[in-house]
View 1: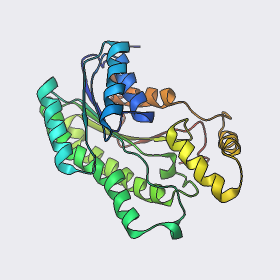
View 2 (view 1 turned 90 degrees about the horizontal axis):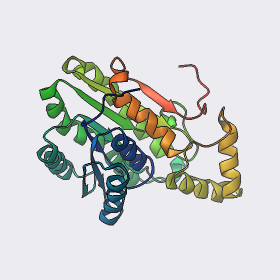
View 3 (view 1 turned 180 degrees about the vertical axis):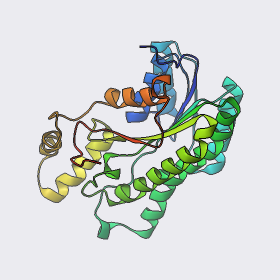
View 4 (view 1 turned 90 degrees about the vertical axis):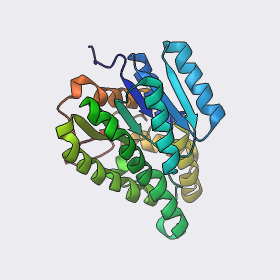
Amino acid sequence: MDLGLKDRVAIVAASSHGLGQAAARAFAAEGCKVAMCSRNLKAVEAAAEEIRTNHGADVYYEAFDVTDASAVQRFVENVAKRFGRIDICVTNAGGPPAKGFMATTVEEWKRSAELNFLSVVYFAHQVIPHMQRNHWGRIITITSVAVKQPVPDLVLSNSVRSAVVGLVKSLANEFGKDGILVNNVGPGYTATDRLKELAAARSKVTGKSEQEMFEGWAADTAVKRVGQPEEFANAVVWLASERASYVTGQTLLVDGGTYKGTS
C-alpha cells in the first residue's frame, strides 16, 4: 500500500531512542525527510546516522530541551530552511517520574506540565503556519494508554497527558479547514527503557521482581505480550499518511488490548 509519504518532511521529537526513534525510522523507510531532536547530542547524532545509513534518508537533527519554547522555535525554523516545508510533526517527550500522588512535589507537577503538555503547545504554535501555507499537515501527539485507563504509580503522567487530549480535540476542530489533521497515539506497555524504569519503581513498592512485573503487564493485554516500538511506529505512520485522510481529533491506542473500556 502506498502511504503517500515520499518526500514529506516529518519532525519527530525525542527521537534518539524508544518510541520516537522507532517513529523516525518508520518515516524514513517510507521515503520521508526526517528532522530529529533530543536533549542528548551524542544519542540523537547516533540515531540519525543509523537511520541515514539504513534507509538512505535525508536526516537533520539538533539537541535541545523541548520545554524551551525559544529552542523549539529555532529548531522548526531550521527544519523549514533545510527542507523548504514541514508536513508532519510528532510531539514526544520522556515521561515524568513514576510515583504515587503523596510522593510528588509541586515542582514535579510544574515540570511534568512543561514536559508533556506545554512542549506540545510550543511545537503546534510553530508548525501550524507552515502547514497552513500548503493546506496539508499532520500533528500527532504521543501520550499513553493512561489517557483512557490510568496506570498505577503514574499519577503525573495520567493527569498531564490527559490535558493533551483536550488540546488535540481543540486543534483538530480549529484547523481541519486548513487541511491539518491532529491525532493522538496512546501506547500501552511497550518494550522501551521507560517501561524498565516503571518496572523498577513498581518492583520496589510490591516486592515483586522486574521480570514478574513484565509478566503481569503481558497478562493484562489481550494478546498476552508487551508491544514492540516498531508496532507503535506503524500506527503513527499510518495516521500521518494519505490513507488516514478522514481521521482527526482521535486517540488511537496501540496497547494490545490493555484498555478494557468501550469508549
